[in-house]
Image (cartoon, rainbow, N blue to C red; front, side, top):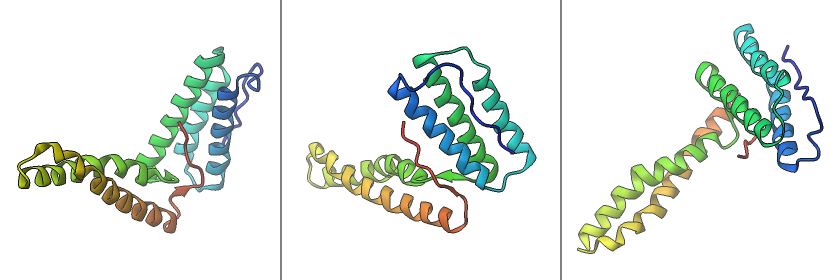
Length: 153
């Protein structure tokens, strides 16, 4: 069973901290619906305990929550292949731009003898990245590996 996040102090006063706290709690709620082993449960609970025992406040607490949230997400992705909504789309957005956009731009620039056209490849790379990422997100959803939350940073 996954522990609950119990923070000391009032998080409602700081709007950004409140949003980060609510996002983390939603992540925990969604994880409690998934089948995870004792090993993963212990890891998640250790991160929750670190947050519950912290004396940090304000922005320091918000950053700490964000760090622990990212540690949990990366651990689950590595161990169980669980990903959040749009995980692959966000990842492949950047990969598409760099892996496909730059080479396409170079091809366009060299074929026209005008390297200022290099930037024309970026939209194509972004489009390819979004398509690949969306397909991988759909596959993760169909396999039940998607956590029903989109992480906003």
